[in-house]
Image (cartoon, rainbow, N blue to C red; front, side, top):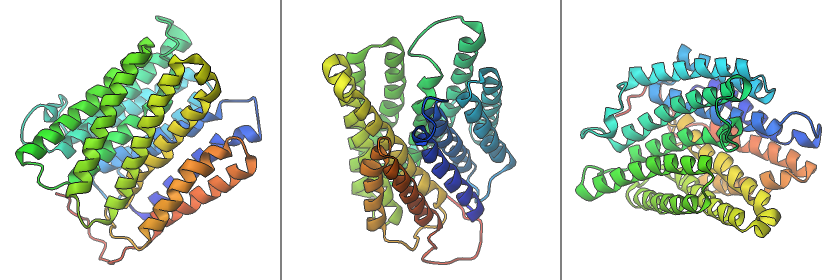
Length: 371
């Protein structure tokens, strides 16, 4: 990705985290959390998915339109201007669907037929999930603001705060499987096929259980997803060798395992109401921070620099700083204003180093060919 686009995403991401701390300055006003998460998951994440699928160094006109209107959508949703937000959401879905239909077939045959890689399957699933998530959010917004056809406390615009993080997870897994060799061998093929279906069906079923308010089934599905993530982690660590981006993706997978553990603990505490009242908010915050700024950011950073690896930086030190930010500084910033400033500044430094460190091997600016 060209430097000007990386700079733009850096500004959006730092602004997103900063909005998450604005309750220190203007308490009791608009829900800045909504703006904070939409800017990260939908603007940065959704645009990155389209960029990755199109497989170009620069952004096409469609991807640029998606970026602009995703910011407008986030602002409208934050201000609770739901009808204009629904119009923007529909436009975003149309743009994403146009990219999907150009890259893949309308019916996702890649999921069911031989001859398609697991990486392609995850990439198509990511884009399809983004389109369906946008269309569902439009339906929910119009129902809450105008139609009033159904009333479900668990199905509202807030449900999609972290819901848009799932397409980002899928595109990161697409990147990971694109780096794993020997996937055509019988065992590797079976393991990758299982991982694809377990992740996608598991999250869909989990979402349905959230809407239904069924807690114990949520625990069961989360355990299945947890062991599936362990399977993917083992495959990736075992078979990917000698790549700098491996370190960042392994770190991201550890963040993902951390989110699974905190997610299970949160649901169990919700079942046991006494513990939930004391620790529920803290666990939910730790879970959300690790999902957004740990796992998702690791994947997005690799996507932004995928044409540049190896890059000139100390991976171990940068990853250690990343964990310090996500596990300590960012959560503490919710309660301590000075820590909020430090976390935002440290986050900006991390993004600058990750996004703008030079390549170890400088090459002519030739459009790369990805197999």
